Image (tube, rainbow, N blue to C red; front, side, top):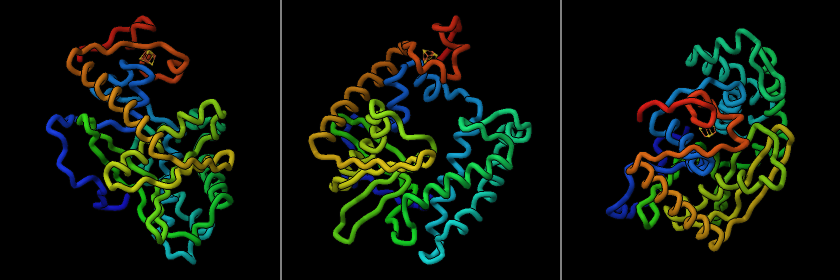
Length: 283
Ligand code: SF4
């Protein structure tokens, strides 16, 4: 993470600024199901580790550290040399994850299981990155940077941007690395929601509207670009204001309704959810 970088607004927040902040993933949780949001944000219930998420963390770590190396040395071999230390550090810090890797039974969506296979599939994702972009030809302005903004209603936005590039004329490009496959075009909006969220936070905190949002999908080697405009981000701002107000109401009333959908298949709280015969614990 780029230490100490905070490009949040200097403006004083409105008097009713919320004590909590909305991130893209938590905003999507609430949109999906208020009870899911409650379990994650209010109750902070632990969730089982995921190998896919762990591999994503390693890839992000490698691509962040790659830019610590002077431009001429940013080769695919130099990046590959960072993979194993990143995995080892992660496994050392998380014994539950280490046990999952050791027993070799749990697997990623692509079937990788056990450390050898995980090192190899991580290398595949890093190779994909190098086919999409040449890191020797760019110098990011920021990496893993915190962006924060407070909307006029007091709703606070907060999130970490994988990479921010700035052109000599000051234009901003927001870059996000995804270790999964690019979604079907019907679901692209959801994938771009995160980057539009960051673009809005950057716009409101710095006054600069990012010119381009770029998603790199490393599993199927695809880049998706989106150019936001003021109208689009103003629309998103209205949506987030409404979402923030709905969350504030639920926090006040304690009414966190469950909303069953296809996404329940991926929810780790089924045993606590009334939709599956469970009972939520006291708040
Ligand atoms: S199982 Fe479905 S309805 Fe229940 S908390 Fe999870 S996402 Fe919500």
